Length: 111
Image (tube, rainbow, N blue to C red; front, side):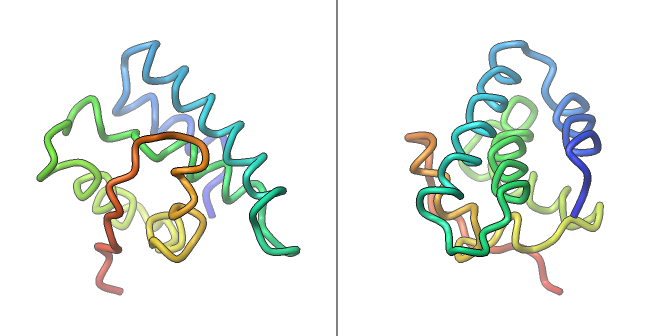
């Protein structure tokens, strides 16, 4: 799993606007709370927080429905991020508890 600093650097590489960065920080905080409230007893709050931080990192550069979130998931895969950060049965599926933006995209990593 990447560090929080690495995830922030990735977000800033693809997201230049302050409003979308603030949104990412808000969802990061909300996802940490969701992990405590809705996660299993061994839920990794840091992992859930990273899901929130990175959930829209690709949106500014790839905003169309055929690009977002698929392009971002491929970028994460290419950088060695865990499939759990993108898979709907990992913590990302609870993104809807932190934000109304949920398109139900499935995993895109092949391996």
